[in-house]
Length: 453
Image (cartoon, rainbow, N blue to C red; front, side, top):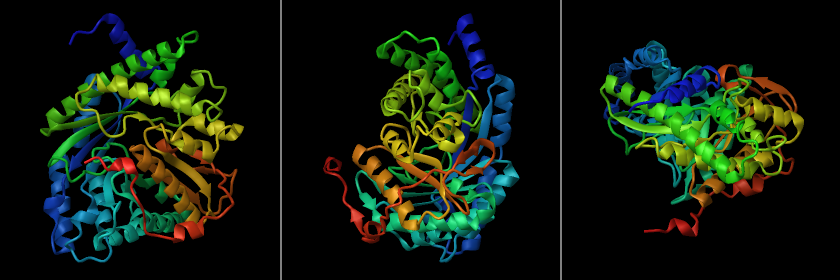
């Protein structure tokens, strides 16, 4: 493919001025063949396989960075859900599996390993319950392991017993990691309709329908989209949408190049490209600022949901034309602590938890990286999760919740997580309780439109 001088200059500007990067290359690896009746033997197999298959990952990523001048921020691994891999072991506590994953991540210099996961949208196996109950300790004693639990789907409904349990688990994880502001909860996410090919943490796992191994790529570029919209002051919405779509195409094309090259060098299939506008705490790399560039005085004000809907849809339309295999989430993330514009909106009083929930009906994921008062009850956490699961179930989309009840903090206080996780004000929650509702248990049935066979 030939590029004009103007296109080359545009691409250089994307990197140097507008913070475009490959947010992650994530190597998905099946561990199903590592299952054993002996937990110790299973973990030895896991370590050997990960070192063998993922050994060249970090070096390959760094080589591509140097040769192409394209920043690759994170090199990650996603594995088969450990609740499935460990099921035949007879172990009661799955924390040692998390510790092995963490050990391998450090040995290979991988940023994160995802897959300390369970899929319980319709019910629990004994292994699922063991894994979920192991989460607080596992995330306390590891640094690079991420955990996810799928609680609901459009086809199955919402497992409210699992929703109730996860409120307790999130609370326990926060308390276990209280010395770091509940940092363990930043590595724990619950889903409705979890994708099996997601390269982004904390929710990445290698689904059972995936190949033996594959490489998934996550591209990000909020700053690039914002810069493009700065030239659209007098345009109507049709022209605005077209600008976003064309810019997303250019970003995705670059990601496709990197993904194919990395997969080729690793000798594994290319999986999917996830074009998600994932912000960072850096100024100029914010989804909230894109919404404001469309004409909103502040993110969270009236019109924010409509603006986010337009943005998400055009990112998907532009991206899908630039890559044969688009997957994961692909759209726009709104993680509060990782977006300086969202933080500014909270401080200005224009962005509330209720408005964030409304915006999740049209964004790529859901309530993400939101810090709550430490005394928030487990039942309230579960109720927040239930609301978000219902949005995903009814709208046949992926939704997620990554919330942090910060021990010892109250609404208005500040918590700092550092790095890409950023920091954020503590957001208030509704004071009315939901314990009786959450205590009912059982399963909320799937919606009528789920019956499509």
